[in-house]
Length: 329
Image: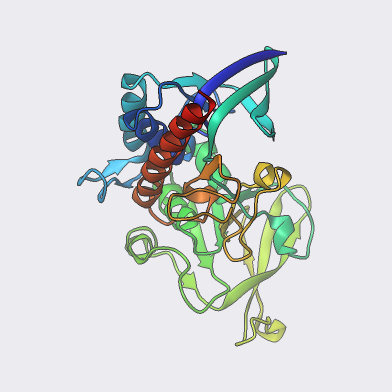
């Protein structure tokens, strides 16, 4: 098994990982290594071709790829090292165990930064009754299929949940020529940003059904429609007022979950409130040589806020790594 070492090792090269890497180098870490399972850096920003990023951090409106490109350049200029198409299997006492096309790899560190981001809730977690036809996508999956792979996901579309990705995809699909019938939201209020509702739903005349939910999915090979019903104050559906909406595609945008399987397996304390690791003011977890930042800690609405946390985590991790080396010498 091959072995590498870095002062600061970062898992993930999305906005959190990139920001942390740049800050770690600026704070004096001699060797910073990012481990990324994808073939290129940028994380979810690669597929976010819409504008709205960077208003706080850069003072201008950028697309996701533009925002990522700025930090990728900063990381390259700072001589950050990369391992692409490499998956971290386990966080151990002094290293992480990785798998790549070249086989198993051990990467030791003085400080480790968790920047794995988050994932979407699936249909399975929602327990919607009905059949299991094709044509059901998480909003982020549909976004990748359209924006990166150039595929069409459907023509007549219902979106479940008023999360930001779902509303942004309502606009994107409309611009691609699809008909977004409506967005269905369980709660009596919007779950995403108000600006996304205005720009992505209102401006395109897409109805938002608050206090409604999908109670059944219809269809065999391909989804043929959904049954939508209003809910009461206890969020229980009123089946007598339910209606069938014909569609060939259902997008699910019902929230994000911090990606913390590695964190839990390493025995690092997880917050019951956020679903991410418990951190202090330096973004340091309960294990002192492990730091965390961004959506792996708690789901954040703005990428600029992720960057702010990442810069702090990178700086503190570099300082910890320097102190650790000093103790060993």
